[in-house]
Every structure is written in C-alpha cells, then in structure tokens.
Image (cartoon, rainbow, N blue to C red; front, side):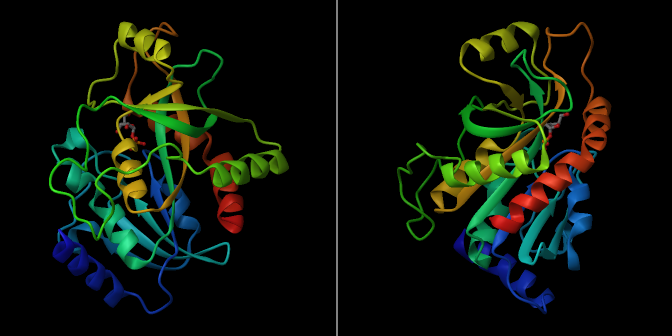
Length: 271
Ligand code: R1P
C-alpha cells in the first residue's frame, strides 16, 4: 500500500510546478463545479495516475484539480469513488492516503445527501457534525500499516470542532442558512426505503448518502482534520410523496451552486 501511495504521489508531484497542496477537497455529486474556481490549475485525469480508480458516476468528472483557492494551495477531487461502484473500501479511500502523503493536513469533504430530518428542505446545506457508518465495512479492516496511522483510531471528534466553528461563522457572515446534523453512510446504490429512513431517523441520522464515511475514517486514521458539508439534494424516501432520482440530485446541487461556492471559498480562506 505504501509503495502504491508513493507512486501516485510521485506522479502528481511531477505534474506540479508550484507549491504542494495543504488543503484537500472531495467534491460530491454535482458539486465538482467548485473546482472551476481554482486558479492556476493543474488538472490530472484519474486514469493517468498510477493506482487510481476511475469515476463511473454521472456528476463526477474524474480528475484532480490542483492550484490556488483564496490564496491557499488546494487539491480538489472533481468526483469521488463509491463502494457501490464495486471498488474496495481501500480503493475508495486511496486518494485520501495520497493527499496525506502530498502534505494535506485538512480535508473538506462534500456530498449530495437525502434529508432525513423533517425540518430540512431540499437545497439546504448541512454541516456534518458526526456520522454513522451503516456500510457494513470499514477501510481499516486488515493488517494495520503503522506508518499510516494507529490500529484503533479515535473517532470522538471525527469532524473537527474548530473547523465546524469556522464554517458556522462563515455562514453567519454570508447570511446563509446552514443546517447541522449527522450523516449516515449507506452502501447504495439503491436509495433507502421509507422504513429504512424512519429507522435511520430513530438512530439519530439527519441526512443519508452513499459516500464520505470511508474517506473520513481514513482521514482520521491519518491524523487529518476534517470538515464535512452535505447538500440536501432531496428529502429521503417517505417524507414527500415523490420518487427519488439521481437527475434530481444533480439539479438541486446546480440550484445551490452559488451558496455552496461562496461558503466553501470563505471557509477555505480561514481554514
Ligand atoms: C446518489 O444520487 C449519489 O449521490 C450521492 C450519493 O452518495 C450517490 O453516490 O453522491 P456523493 O455522495 O458522491 O455526493
């Protein structure tokens, strides 16, 4: 694993002329547009990076964009990998390992998620305060590589309190409504049934999606500080009397694009 990480890292470093990134961004379904804001970008297609999987989901472009955002050196994944695509948990989280090897210490993860909390509306942004892993798997299963992190990582502050505070004050300054809540990670690719949504609400979930949790586990294992933002792209099954579709997910993320970009840019400036 270390060898593969180093080969990916070396390839990415070869493409860069400027400084190495310190902040990582993972851009979820329909949210990749944020990478267009990055100045002096170096764009690297996933298919060219040794050991990187490729993106197969609509709304996930499948490239790294490395450059400056708000004067900070950032690396953005314009598209992520999901467990339901058939990748292993280790493959899904491999880019987080590579980011860490490149020197990234803070990670902003974003996603499109279904709203479980009935006080939410489609189009809301939600700060992730914590998560519940319902994926039935974990990227750290298997022999632990001590150089990458401890055998039993602490997850009591999986989403960094200080960064949560930064995001809240940024939203206040922008006069932007920001919900807060617990993200539930399911495997997908099916959306949840109404009964499952009811169960997840009882368990303490506020939003549900099919990503993020593995990445955040690996980031914590690697000692990175994490901030998470969900775009509530629709209300989860059983709340409104309408079927769910990925087209709707993409449509909603396009609708909130401006709020999302403004918030992330402001956060990055302080991060
Ligand atoms: C379903 O519409 C897709 O959108 C979300 C779900 O996880 C699923 O992949 O994508 P992201 O979590 O990558 O934003």
